[in-house]
Length: 278
Image (cartoon, rainbow, N blue to C red; front, side, top):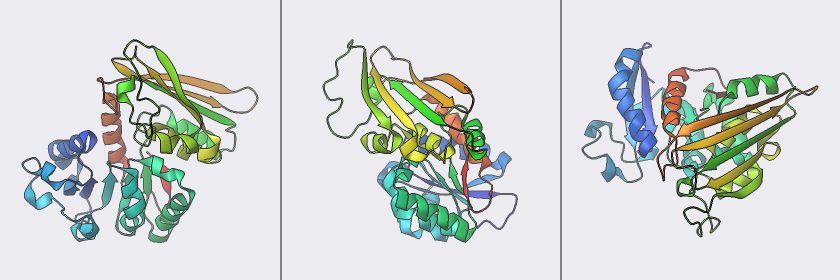
């Protein structure tokens, strides 16, 4: 861990669009905020050449502990969470950028237990989820009754398993691709439903099987993604929010989500041995 209590060393796992954004922000704004870069890892290390100083490139992820980071953030794939999550928590606070991995109940339990055992915090960024803290408070009070999330995007923005959307054509309009539990939905679209997974973490009493989700392909959505959240509480209480997140055609992640991740990272200073939505 960093010896300077005023500075947090950050390890970034993944160098896609979001990983590149976070690395650039740490370089640019980190020093003034007490953040320094400890390492950057990418499955294809050649992608880092010329973009990341050689001394910060981590070639073998299994040697991450040598970099003594305070916070490790994963922004690449749920499989990394499965393979390294517990190890990360044994050394650092861990921000999981692919919370769809938490649909696996065994992994979810192991990570929660590791956080408690080592006194580290497992951070789940809210991403494109609007009102996540309010959902969590309603859940913690025991009053949440139901939670539904609909995510609508242009078909080029989805990365789905199987052949669910291989036959789309421009101008076809709106098509519901799936509606059901988030537990069922995450394996179908692991790169597209992290917002729903974060909601399932916030609404822990409902969990991944209780929170319901729907993904919609809509060729009219050429400039933004739409995330609708419907929360139901006792005695007729309900909240319905609609978030339009600007996004380019083919973009998995909307532009506003980048700054949301950055703001989540700034919160990761240790909240005890537990899971924390940030």
